[in-house]
Image 1 (cartoon, rainbow, N blue to C red):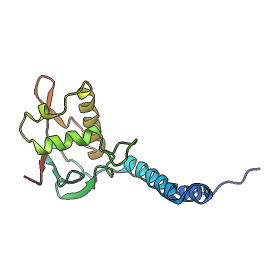
Image 2 (image 1 turned 45 degrees about the horizontal axis):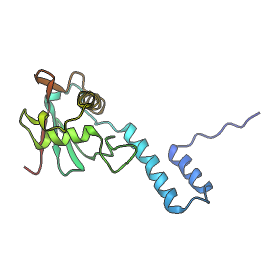
Image 3 (image 1 turned 90 degrees about the horizontal axis):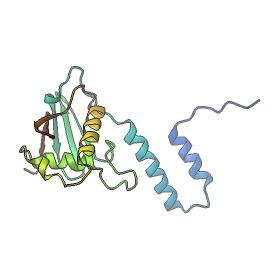
Image 4 (image 1 turned 180 degrees about the vertical axis):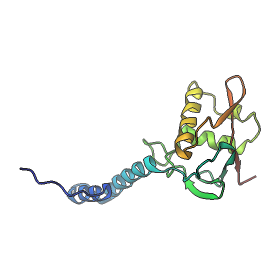
Length: 164
């Protein structure tokens, strides 16, 4: 009969693996732990959106190229792109296309900001992923982007750069 294993956290599981991999250099073990934790955090982070919020009550302020402040009604939080799940999994220090779109919309608030997005064949797919991420992160129903021209969209929420 097998013994039941005591329930431990993922963090403890990672520590056990790191202790048992003594042949792996310490620097590499630390890097592996950091990557494992960044994946774990990126999957679970959601904004504590107050009930009944609409997209019009969301405000996103780009503080730096890596940091953003998000406010919905009276709830305000500050995040990095990695913390909210927008870091490239292959290169954790590099942002995904959704973060680049968020930056473009923040730095160019006019309706032509869509045209400043880098030209690429996957733009429509990237917009779809951006829309899906916004819905997941905020937990607000409805479309976060409004059409302003055929196949062109603008955010329904307020977005700006703190640099301006």
